Image 1 (tube, helix red, strand yellow):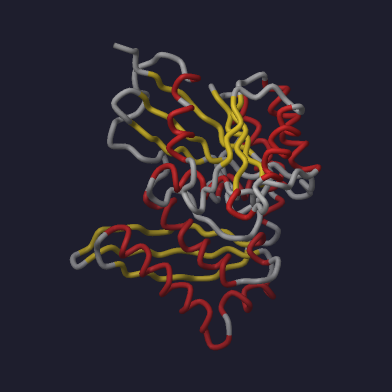
Image 2: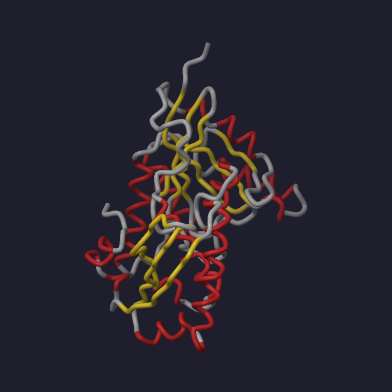
Length: 297
């Protein structure tokens, strides 16, 4: 009988290449929030996939990006680099048919880490004709000695079973690190804050999503359901008005969408109260970032 295998698998790539969508698809449930905007993922999030023969601990990381002007961006880059250094295997995600200078930046980090890597060509459903894919795979194979190159579509679920089967042989023989029923290392409070931030990010079409964060002040089981109080922090007074909207309309809409998703996830009624407050330039202060729940790296 083969030994049980367990290890950390860092999922890395440039911003907006589909890392969180991939992890959610592999897990069969929503672990990380997803929007079309880059840098939606800000934290290191573990997703634990346990089978009879293995436990794969996927590490969802912020996209590694060049412009790291603010403290938050630098922290996100360090978080991704730290996950890479601690991994037993790397999944290097690129967009099928498109390789950018940012992809090359991430690949340099993968090379220097010395960690075995599987390259994933994501969004293959968008490539036509399919012959283009073969040429891209051949080109990528010359850039690095990947243990495998697998074309996938995280959105459509294409080839994900092949990927799941390819991972365990590259992990060390080890007993499971986490309980079998565990799916993520993040608390319920963290997940509630992320759902609220996702709804805000989807609704705000300017740069504002990068200037706001959500902090849970109260998360309590009460008779008749769950009570959640949350603060939406922005960096400037002008941003507060945008988030609140005319007559509070946008804040009400965000609250309604977040409450409905949380109610469905938790299978219980949710009473959600939101406030918008200003903390000047919080995204450029390491002290503020730590007080708002960002992991020091």
